[in-house]
Length: 133
Ligand SMILES: [Zn+2]
Ligand SMILES: [Zn+2]
Image (tube, rainbow, N blue to C red; front, side, top):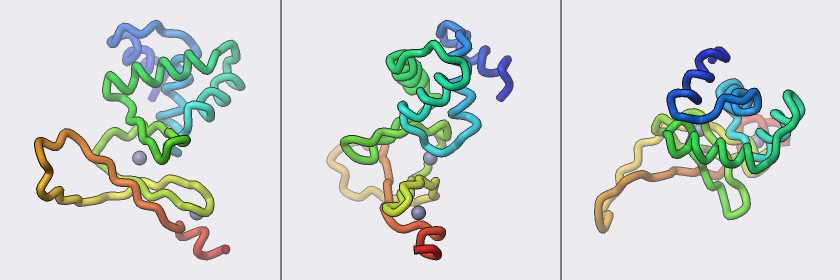
């Protein structure tokens, strides 16, 4: 995404356009690695400086509410952000920690009500780790 496109997204949704916010969105768009808020914070701090963790967190929260970002809780202590909001699952390598997007086709049976969303997280050992470890 160009800076103009990112600026447009922020403006459309009434978020103040700051270099820091632009870099948060650029990072999410460029590095589809399912980063943590801490990773995004470190990147933006190194790139433009002058940013607090709270700003990163609040911006992510706003983007999530607007549907631009998906928050995935891998476990109680690890929450990552995904700029790909299409329906997909995740494969987490328990050796290297990499998070891969996977396609899935889950059939939910006998839900006791209406399903609004579901999250599929599969844990395993990725190809690279199987090969080198
Ligand atoms: Zn791995
Ligand atoms: Zn993903």
